[in-house]
Every structure is written in C-alpha cells, then in structure tokens.
Amino acid sequence: MSCRRPLKEFQMSAPVKIVVLLSARPGKAEALQELLTGMARATRAEPGNLRWDFWRDQAEPTRFVIDELYVDAAAVTAHRETPHFENYFAHINDLAERTPFVLDPVDVAG
Image (tube, rainbow, N blue to C red):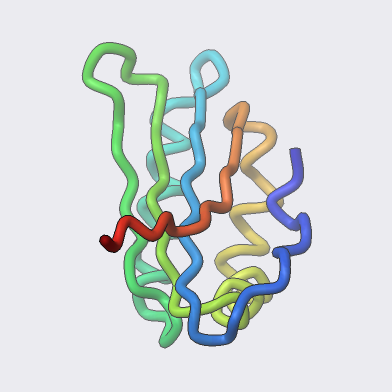
C-alpha cells in the first residue's frame, strides 16, 4: 500500500490526521525504530507539522504505530516532498508491513 496515494480535497484550514500501523519484518524491528526516530526528529521541524510520534506495542515489540497531525493537506504534500520522507519511503517496505489511515475529524458538537 502506497503512502503516496492522493489526499482527498480538504478545506485549506482543515487539519489532516494520519495513523500508520507497522509490523516489522523478521529481524528488522531495531532498524525500523532507527528509521522512525530519524523521521520523528526531521518531521517535527517542518512548519506544517503539529505532531509526529511513534509508539511501540508493549505486548508485541515488532509492532509500531505512527501518529501524525498536519495543519492541512498542503502541509502533508510538503512533507511527502522532503528528503527524510523520500528516505523513509525508499526503506520502509524492506523493514515493515504497513497500513496507513488518513482520518477525518468527527464533529461531536451538540
């Protein structure tokens, strides 16, 4: 599954939430964590990024979750054009199976 699928049309002011589920390939969990650590540092410095964290499953340490939040779709597009994303995209398929989700906010107001 490609991380480069187009985003649907968002209002320019709408934040974009992305969650990615990762299962490290056998023997690749530490290399995956190293790749994600580099992504976290670089992505957090992007002007359109509001959050970029990753989590490691307590019960199964080969599973990770990426938690991303951007100010808008343009910020996601800019992120996907960075050298660190290109590096991530070049290596991720060798390190893990992944399932990305691009999420819409749910209005729970009255």
